[in-house]
Image (cartoon, rainbow, N blue to C red):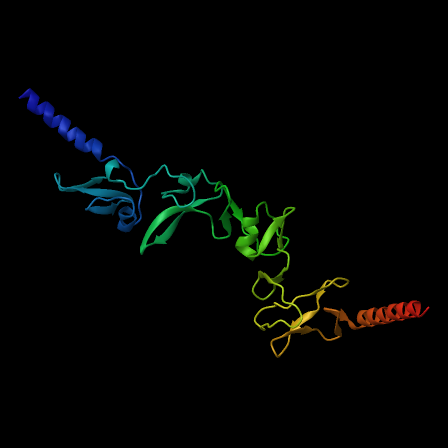
Length: 242
């Protein structure tokens, strides 16, 4: 009789010990994303598994958990922000995956994970925004890089004010659209764009600019360049004559 009581006690204890995983939840779907038990319910903000023997819901067993809670980095399943402390700046967020929702560690919307996947960095919105890695610039501006702590468009790219992105430069005569500021040639003295997309959807010089030697030059500047070139040609001609 004593043996029967002892065995019964061990059996009941083992059942109780098995169901000891404390898994927070908001809905039944939250539990279904991380537990493979057939009978699941979110009761009092905790995942509960159905016990066929006792015909009741109890805390789920660790054996039922199908997610590796020791996984690190963005994308790991979490229950609270503290679960994401291995990633600086990350929080535990609700995410939709394959028509189901689950809580995972991720950076806030205005931030992006760094190359080493150890911390979240602020996404740049404009050229010359502060940065520590190029990923911040690329995420916000596309074709850009972090140089000397500031975001810059890559060579032969410029910042499109309309779409807030770094886009390829288009030169005089290139096809263009009015929807983007793709025509671009920087006038060095004034640091202004001397090109514009014409009504014919072709890059042309702005008014008061003249196309000369592959560049759009301000009319006064182009006149000086033309006069200087003419004088040089005349000098060379005279030298050859003598």
